[in-house]
Image (cartoon, rainbow, N blue to C red; front, side):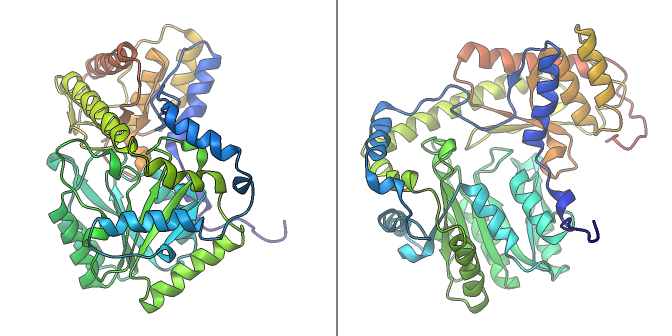
Length: 443
């Protein structure tokens, strides 16, 4: 072609959560049965919407309104319902014009980063959720900027690291928070969040808080919505129904905008709305369902049962993994993910797991060449046990480990999965001396 048509950030568009699927599917074709622990889809792991919720959605299918376009910002009644929910929390008060619907949070993320000025950077946590880190890196054409989450302190943000990076890099225009966090399951206390808002205020940057899992915070864990603590700082909170109902196939999410009256921020938010206007609007039917489902008196009990169930599974995982030498685990406090971290120096490029299937063994041995040492473990685990987890280095992170989910509804299968991974770690770490050989993938 006579001109290069590739965007400068094209190489930054990576999503290990889905990319590992291609490897697992190759092994599946070679005869390895796969247990999928890579993706946060509650429906795929056996959760079902309660009958009353299905009845509401079924009735909407019979409503002719749900087949037509809606306002670009979204269904007015649903936006008012969500604005009222925000305002009942206290703190910043919004109107329905501060709510904008998107075709899932992924669509919102793509536009939030895609319509930033290229030189304006947003710093996010490491480990990072891949959709955020890839979208931010792609918009800038450079690697995603990150602050550290401290695995020795329940995966809390390192505020010294965050502030230093903002102080010495004036291209940073925003701070990204994921609370509860994906991939660690960490939940940030109110006082810590207020300190992050204070950093944003002092350095005149805006805030983005992904609150996808906010209503899946475990019993007894204290935190705060961004709206409760944002005060006068411009900010955006992201919410959705994919993991909350859960209805991931609906592709329905929204943003809550705070302090959009600030001059530059107002123009920026208008650009997001104009971008949505080019698509006319987001999918209508799931928007209509929100006041009916979330306003139903049975909804809170539905969420309470799910929260309690995930907390029990988190404890189950802790009981199994905390007894394994060579790894570090923190009990999740929200959502349905857990990160397992290898201790420094325990991995090398000679460790293996037995793979009985000769074709699968050949495939894995070809895939491990030049990869990070945690991905090497993930490939051997796949070939040996069929369990598909995501390497932690796939989350814009230098730490070595992997992410699992707490979603499996079959109790026996879930315990088998956790126990088999734990035994795989023991066997892998003991398969050779853990002396690190200096290669590109060494710790």
